[in-house]
Image (tube, rainbow, N blue to C red; front, side, top):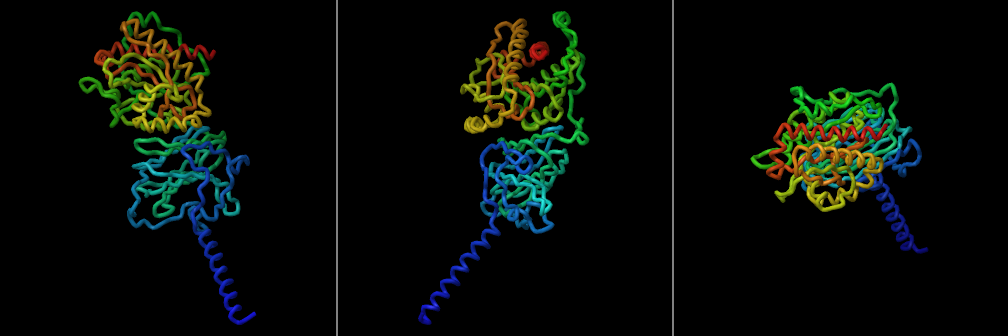
Length: 455
């Protein structure tokens, strides 16, 4: 071998070694490869039952020894070019076998989520983490301790200058579903499992219906009073008056607001339930306050409700549209049902189409058949009560649609459209105390009929 050939061979080996070392260095500093990225997921219990997704190398996801367990701090140097979203809120709700975490941003961004097995050698818990791309953390957003036996904590950090990472430390979960909501943009994480008995408890901080004058009953109502139900299967019903606070809902003639009339009906319904059945009635709101859609279902799950009834008033660009209809959660079969869902969800028709694509997975454990039966009983009874006093009110029947407020409910749940606030005549009815009482009585008749089918 000539001296020149030897030099060339040495140079080639040296160059190859540099390339290999460079690739190793990049691999050690690169972010975790994205796996299982989609709009919605049912993530099984990786690391606990052995049926979960493939384990991910945590050495690249974890900060330095003694660090943040998955959140790599980055110095906050202000908003960077191309970074447009702010993560503004992190919240959670729990009951003995369910936890919901909501992450709110001020605009929609791409996100990816992953599941990591427990790392015994590094004393790190199993965890779920979600990366929000093109986002920063708003001032004041902090980690939230959960400690409910399912999740230990929800933590948030600036993983990279343009990526916010939310980490959920897992205690013991069986199932996890992740899905987005709009206006404002939120990502919801629902986890289910079985909590240890000694740490299972109920938080009594849920608001209930405020004081209201005793119901004035008509002679017909008094004759129709039935003995209190004694059905152990139904102990608690959540009544959800739609909209509220900054969200007026649909607006009818003379500025009549949906949020006001449905609150009045909801309060009357809750009082009737307590007085006539002995069943506990819990209000998602008893005053004019705004409650996010995801919180309404979370309240029902948190208090272990047996039934969930959301009260609304319908609206249409066609001022002649009128009547009563009841919905349960499912894919919309008609454009009209999709439009109602878009209005109640406060989203566009395009977003409804997107929701339809992910709804099937979200409803995997939803009590669709029970909800459909309750919707049928309530619709029949409500219309029968109303049409007896107010002739000509149409029965629009039972329908199905993708309503955010019903997503994630672990009990039979329905949405009742009590009248069309956009119709001059029915708007006038909605302001009438007698009509409100009649509607409340009709809904309760339907609830009674449904409960009787459970005997």
